[in-house]
Length: 169
Image (cartoon, rainbow, N blue to C red; front, side, top):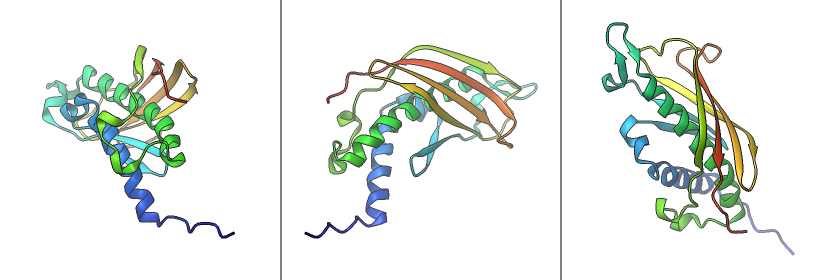
């Protein structure tokens, strides 16, 4: 018995990108801030393109702390959601032809979120990555790091705890 031929790489990429696009459209605050996501395999990097509306202190100028916190929380929620949706995409539980924000699983709910502002956010693009420390059936813990010009010089980091949505088994 012959194995089925593997899917073409482009088909797999399109399926994953469609699912990520639907996931991102599920949070209106993402569009407000202008956050984008760069996907490489299962790894996501959030990008906060610089905009004048993100400046909190025009004398420095510096990114607003609320915009920074929102960016970090968005990164955590999308990173956490992507970690379990990825498995559903690859196993076929999510049909890529019907992916819309309404048909994706519900998002995790924030229990608490602590932000550490390590240095001033400069008026330029910012980047962030989430690392899921623990993800169980009911609870998840996520750490997020944000930087601008140099990945080793973080300007903010955060830790969040989330209530996981009920999932169909």
